[in-house]
Each structure stands twice: as structure tokens, then as C-alpha cells.
Image (cartoon, rainbow, N blue to C red; front, side, top):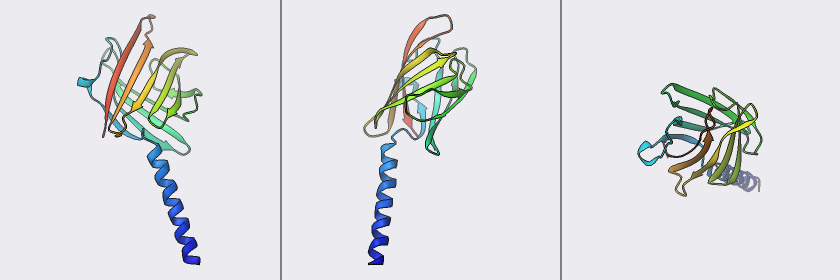
Length: 154
């Protein structure tokens, strides 16, 4: 009887761990596929994005180049609950909020000084191999632009 209880506990624990892992289709390292993307002129290019667990939160690290070709690096740690969490290193944002729409889709809003500068949607393909980010932003001069970036899981 004791063996059965231990085995049942192990199976339930393993099932729970696999469910948590399977539900997080965003985790991992994503590289920009420029040939499949349509980045607006004057927009930054996020060449690598990494999603990783940080306790009960998610950490998102972005590396790329700004519109003028300078290296950029930003980090965000928070929950996908629609609330603003601070961004470090963001040139056009000091907070970002993510909302989980479903297991394959997130929506996001970035703000600088409380004003929305960027928003969009992130969709991971059913097979988990690609991630498409549609972004609508406003630059410092008030010009609106839209981009679609396609990433491949590494």
C-alpha cells in the first residue's frame, strides 16, 4: 500500500510538472528571422528574446539594435496579469504589461512616463517553433508605425 501511495504521488507530481511546462509555450530563446519579418523603417529590431522562469514570475530579456544601429538590451520581470512592471534598459519604455490571452497568445503594452508607446500581440505557432510579434508604436516625434517580427525557437 505504501508503494502504491508513493508511486501515485510521483505520477501526479510528474503530470503536474509536464502540464506546467507544456502550458508555457513562450519559454526559451527566440531569434529574429529578418527575411520573414516586416520591420517598419525607424523601428528597433529585437534580434534575440529570451523568456525564462523567475520564481512565480517570467523574465523577458531582449537584445537588438535601435533605429540608429546602436545595441539595445532590456529586461522585464513580472506576471502575465495585465499590470505594469518596470523595464530596465528600454529606450522607449519604462514599464511593460503582458496579458495572457491563451496558451499561445500574449498581448502587451509598453509605457514611457505613463504614456503608451507600444502595444501588440505575440502568437506562438501550434507546433511551438515560431513566434510572431505584431507591434504598433509611436516614436518620440509622434509618428505611428507597425511591424511584424517572426522569430524561430532555438
